[in-house]
Image (cartoon, rainbow, N blue to C red):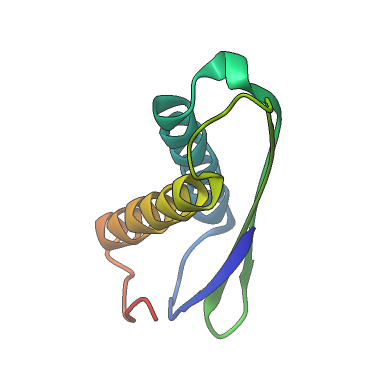
Length: 104
């Protein structure tokens, strides 16, 4: 599952972009592990990419392989993880005092 969100940003550094990507990846991982038992996650690949041109484009991709015994709704958990990742990205951008747009 991937989601793309456009956020208008000015003056953000490359180090800050790397920090945002790492923060999002850690947030997603923590969210997934808090909602799915670790023993039921057979494979997990999280990719967070950010590209800064006129706006900051953040792309998140989560690829999860679960045990056939998992009883929950994976799509709901993935959606929640992505929402939480974008929430912390927006929060950190506000801390950078660079936030000028809204999440669409």
